[in-house]
Each structure stands twice: as C-alpha cells, then as structure tokens.
Image (cartoon, rainbow, N blue to C red; front, side, top):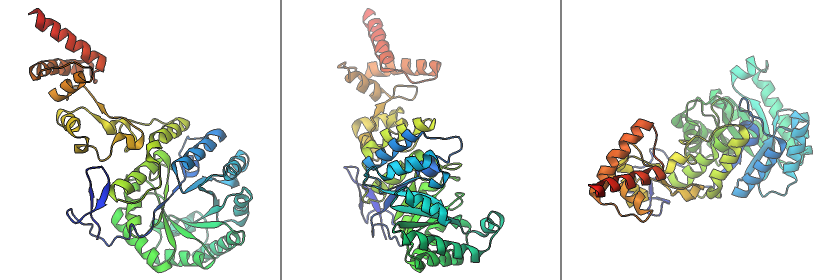
Length: 405
C-alpha cells in the first residue's frame, strides 16, 4: 500500500498518516519514462499544423527539459515529414527518437531510413476496428504484427507495439497479441485508450493483467474524451506501466491526450516519484507549442495556466500571503510562473494591505476596509479585476478625501 502527503517544502513523500490507496501499487518499482507525441498525435489535432522549423524547435525544447523519447512524426507521409524527422534523428539529442508506423514493412523501413533509433508499430486490436475498418480477422492481426516486429528487430531498432483501441479489446486477445509481439522481440506494448472511454479502476485492472501475463513493459496512451487521460495514465502506472505517452498542453485527436505538464507534476508531487524533467521550463515549452498550434494557453489550464497561481478571494489571498502552501501544492517557480494576488470583487482587506505594502505604503486595517468597499464597487461595475495602478489611485483618492475632511 502507498500513501502520499505533501511536506512543508512542497515535496511528496510516503507516509502512513493519510488515507492509503485501495490497491496494490507497483509505482516506484521502476522509474516512469515519458514519451512525448506532440509532433505526431499532437499535430493530428484537427486544424493544427506545425511548420518544419517549429517541429524541430519543439524537439530541441523537449530534449532540453529531459524527455526520454520523442515521437517525431510519421515518415510514411513523405516529403518534408521525412526531412524533418531525419533532421531530428541526426541532431545528437539525448532523447530517443521514434518514428510512428502502420504495421507495414515498407512503412517501418521508411522510419528506419530516417535514422530513428525506435519505431512504433500500430495495429488495431478491437473487433470493431478489425472487422469494420481493416476488413480482416484476428488471425491476420497476429500474423501482421509478428512480421512487422520481426522486420524492425532485424534492423536493430527499439520497438513499441501499439495496440490501437486496446480499451475495447477483449483482454484475452490483447494478451495473445502482446505475446505474439513479444515472441518476435518487441520491447514494449502501448495500451491505447483510443477513444478515451476508460476510467482509472478498469485501467488499473487491464494493465495489471497485461503486465503479469506478458512480462512486457507497458506504455500508457490515454485520450481525454471524458477528462480522464492523466488519471488513467497514473492508474496504469500504479498497475505496473513504466512509460507514458504525453503531449504538450494535452494536444491530440479530439479532446487530446494526457498532457506532459500534468503527468510530470502529478508523478512528482502527488506520487513522490523521480521525474527527470526540468519542470521550470514547462510554461515556456507549453507557451511555444500553443502559439505554434494557433491555440490559446488559457488561464485555467492545469499546472501552467496563470490562474494556477493567481489568488483573489479574501480567504485564499490571506492564506497565501501568510503561507503559500495553504493554497498551492508547489511554488509557481517550479513550472516557470509567478504568483499574483489579484485585486477585485472577492478580495479581502489583507490583499489591500499587502498590495500597498509592496509599494512601501502602510495602510491601517480601518482604511483597508474602506478602500475594499470602493474596490468591490468598481470591480463589479467594470466586470473585471483592478490593476495595481488603479488600486494605487483609489488609495490616493481615498486618503486625499479623508485628510481633506
């Protein structure tokens, strides 16, 4: 059993003084590795296209923060995709560089020719995909994955076998599929919750069975259709998965994938795990990717949204002013952000005192209460928070009237 608490210095550690997890967790037995697919599944988000230079820059930034593996794209697309993946693969990165492929020998050869050191071989395993998309049967799937993996291993690359739509695949066939791939030398199995319909308890059960029955390393590839991508990825890790496929900002097909920033910080602060990621650069990375994608890094985005460390309501602001740990799990600097105490309708007197003190102005409690009433009225009228300049002017006007009386 594992139980986690957050210590005074914001780190997570094992403890017996909080509620224990109602599962036998394998988390911590092996270091969890992150495989980023922003350049593949992230770019498959409807309407998103990265330029070749943006793709290369994103790869450099991912490598700089310490990502373990970069899924650089789909070489089979040809053209500049091949050129960019080859450029990334030859850039001397610390990260492994992986090319994504259909279970097709010709496609896999295209990846290998790009100079990648790893390939993903993706093949549908659910009956709905096999019968209505591929127009094949299970025997064909098993034969195809055997041939594909054998070819890749003969060429000396690391092989991730992707079970597409694994979450709608019967567990017995999923185990058979994994064993067929393992027999040809596959290095890991990617469990793809392709349409995001799993929840953590069923995910834990499925991954635990796969790990026990096949002995393969398991990678989580979770989609966010029901808002559970990161939770499902964490559940899979508790069951023994040692890889997580993530994207910056949670980009990806439809509602997206488990996000890099959420997964990395959840592992570090909620689970107390070693994460070889420079989290201080997460905001810079996410901001760049979102700009390249033409998407907004919205304020309430988990982990890297500016609202994460913006406090307005009186009780919260007062607590943070006294001790940031009262309402923040980790300090803003940890992900490259800053803390903001916002002055607005829901502010309290402590915010007025603190804000003015930042400017060397001492405000009594009585004056703070009076100014607060003015702040709330103006904020309600303007339907927004006030700027520091507006607060200072309000303070000066109030003091002038008070002294004039």
